Length: 77
Length: 158
Image 1 (tube, rainbow over the protein chains, first blue to last red):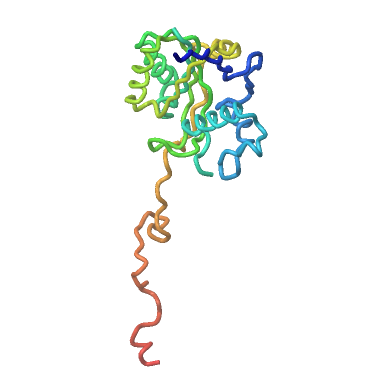
Image 2 (spheres, each protein chain N blue to C red; image 1 turned 180 degrees about the horizontal axis):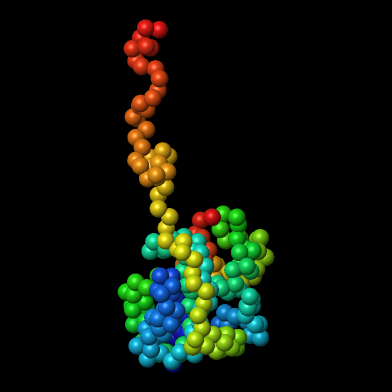
């Protein structure tokens, strides 16, 4: 008779007590700030160059894409 | 009810005729679907990074409103169909920035922004060099001018 093994509780995806990193300056309307993280050809710079954490880099990507959609930034420089 | 941020790009031709009408294009669309407008103001008027619907410039209207999730589909559809709205972006936000309410109130009912520049339409293709003269006459480059001074007969003799 097989015994049921007690399932090991999963670790939470975001560790408890660790706050989510957010840069409030990253906004699609703040073009002066977000264009700092773009190349002269209007490409998004890599994390290696921006030195953002993963969450902030994702926010930056989203903000640049929103600005491109509204015609505030070019797709190709 | 959720809070949303809406950015609408308006055709400058509508803004040039009357700003109130242009603002009403956005506010009426939102009110039609039962949205409660918290703030609506002119964010900027600027040159676009790439032409949209034959326009090089547009007026940006920034709005914050409260609406049910089902209303967003209707607002999106109306914004897509309205030719005066060049493009739109709707985002769900946690809270309205405090500065937005002040700026929206400062705009007031009788606010009249400076008229947008006239160069919002795409430049026409420039005419070929020499195709049109200064007086508007069509110049044919292949035509030989009358007073050349040397005829073909003279060239043969030489």
